[in-house]
Length: 86
Image 1 (cartoon, one colour):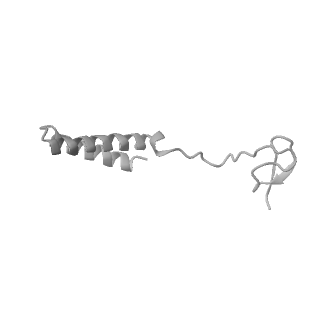
Image 2: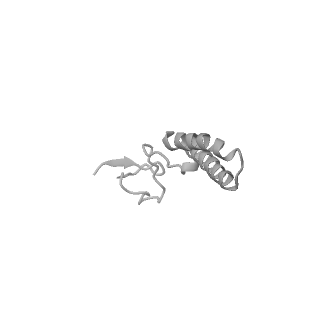
Image 3: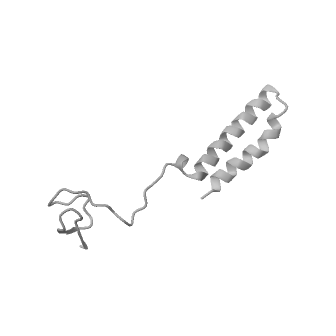
């Protein structure tokens, strides 16, 4: 059972607990990466823009607008770019 030092009271505690049993202070894991929602990442934003472009292109094509089919390829390209953006 590996031990760590509590940043609040300097007691030796297990690194598997979320809070110190002595002082109740939370332990922060310095090695863990915070998770982000997909829309907060750049790829998620590009994916959302591509989705809007594709939806606009499909609707415009269905109603007969001349620019609908012209927007399908760029919309698909932006959507795929957002899908694979890291």
